[in-house]
Length: 250
Image (cartoon, rainbow, N blue to C red; front, side, top):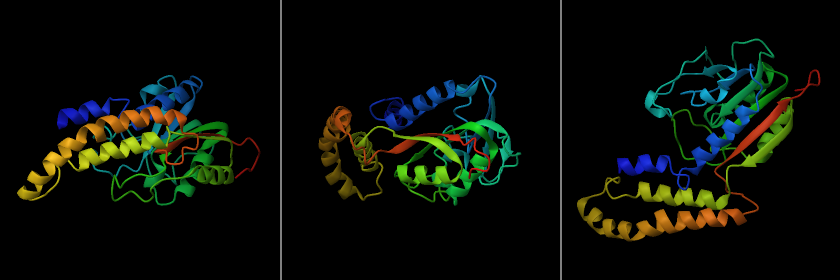
């Protein structure tokens, strides 16, 4: 099972959520001019530090999660240990801010967006990702399942951002495939605390279902996703926005 999980982490078919997000962030980082001051809000393990090697990259985090709850099971170097809604820097200190998979973990996400607006210089770029719907994780600091495009459009604009672009991280069928795989892992007979008789009954059913749930459905969803125009059940959104250059815009 451990080897299977490690393989799944690097599979673009099964771990598309993380891999597509990383690819998108790499592309966004490449568009940030060399020498720019970049702040990673809620950086955690700081997995994107290398992407911003051409910039002055700094990090913020509240640093209260257990290491095992982090992507690389340890915090990276954190420059500002603080609440994301109250970062101890002067206004207009940064040319770009990156904030990935963080908003669902803060109690007041609108205040965090407002704070990001405060620390960005006019014309500065926001690089933001968050889920549309996610299971509980990094508890007890998980307050929201996710955010819709309408949330970004409304509250980023209210916080002084313009040129707001929201794009889904793949479509509905890829999201369905993720849940199919999640079911396979969660229902594995060795993963469930069931009595012996139930395990004996369930194991052959699980094995018979495995090729369909972990093979046919993910491959079918990958192919069908190309024809999904509405993408109403995407796993999350990738967002960019620009801090308004209009004086007093909030």
